[in-house]
Image (cartoon, rainbow, N blue to C red):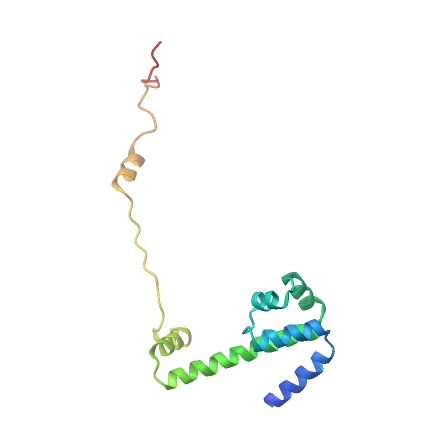
Length: 142
């Protein structure tokens, strides 16, 4: 059975009832104003990122609300991608094919060419020291 938007809202309402006021404000801003951007939401509400991560660790209802918000944003992005594909927008079509049709040859690869300079190659072939001659040819004037 698929979860409907109404079921999702009821579940969200139940969870938010268990959160404190700041957590509720955070979830609302996170979902409605800042497109699930943790840094932007923290900055706007004057909340330290460490507090956000503490809430994520210690408050399951808060964490679930944040995860639901992210999933909803991903759903929205997927819907927009599908709309763009249906409208014939090439960038969206290419993106989809590169992600979903690799087995059909739609992928990118990076070709790298490595060249060694002739000077480096020459230096590698020189012996470390001349055969049998270890005297220092640079002498300081006395």
